[in-house]
Length: 473
Ligand SMILES: NC(=O)NC(NC(N)=O)C(=O)[O-]
Ligand SMILES: [Zn+2]
Ligand SMILES: [Zn+2]
Image 1 (cartoon, rainbow, N blue to C red):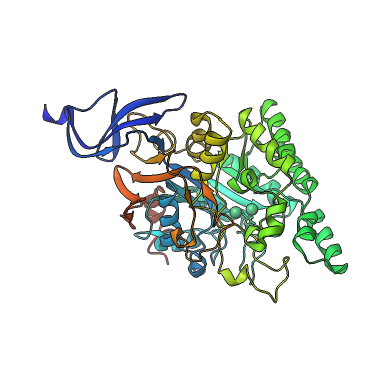
Image 2: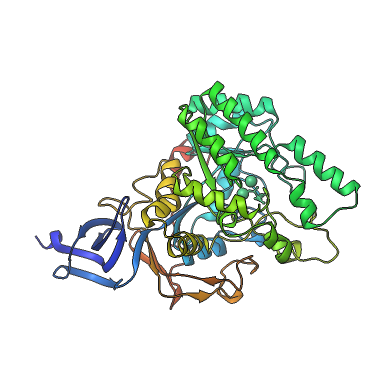
């Protein structure tokens, strides 16, 4: 009898963000899961209570686009500092990209190495992407068996150095890979920029002695994104493969993808906080710290992306946290073209999106929350275990105070290299606590409480039985 009303923890008095409404509820947690959502659990027995009066309780963000760069480039970020930053930003789960670690995650051996580095080093739960690259088509099935459902491919040069680096796909590899992935039941994620267009324009800019930020932006125009998206939609139609478009930067591309969805194509679309918060003008003003590919766009595009969100045409907001040593961003001897492309933002996604989308623009919280949590969890087949506040779901929660505006200072960043285009920005709200499976991993007052409580969501055992995972390396 006692069990029925005993909870390990109760989150009380908060405004709880449910899939289609916000309701004042108490959340009862037992064994890491949400077991009660009631108007009041004031009389219940509890191991601990968290008072969320005047605060909002959201499902933790599921950030399916981060580059933590292990193995071997952990000094660029790593699981430990990267996941700490996520926890501080209200993210409770992530999917780590198959680059820029070395080796990239394009074989089961590489996956095993990565999994080994993550284990015991993550503050929040995680899973991994595989990669679709030339010459490794036979690796797709074994990686799928090891639990990988999403395979990332680049349609333009991903940069990076060395023989074993992640390579972009040629059309044949993409087409064949998509047929194989469709047959397996997985999906492809695409960095959609046309290599033909971007390389041609970058070459021309450099030949003309233009190395600055504006020339970089002009070398990666929206037509490059549209051309790649269009080709990928054709391949999706021909192969039946599900496609997820990562970091889409223009509303034109969102509309193109939306038209394909309405024709019945199984496609989803992601954008990132930087395309919603920043423009080319910020890139020119801030320098390479705001350099990414595709580049930041015009104010008109930024507004257009918000309009797309309001119209329900996006599925996912993810950080595309792509860090590097600060010297690769800020180096007087290097041109803008040579600086690392990638923005450090993992810690700020939820605060930025809620601050701009909800507090400033008045968009509904459930809508924004679905892009941060439910949408990405669905994409990875993790919903509703992850990405929802519902009875039976993991108690992965972000508690947000809408009356705690603060200035983001460099020393508040958990990144290994503390650069970000958001340093110095006034944040309109603040993540005050993050819970992973009912455990408080972070509080704004106390900092990181649990640096290693994150768990892998991969069925590692399936691989290890076949000797493909741990033990084979
Ligand atoms: N090699 C990278 O980490 N690239 C990333 N860089 C960006 N977005 O500038 C990406 O996702 O394309
Ligand atoms: Zn990309
Ligand atoms: Zn990325």
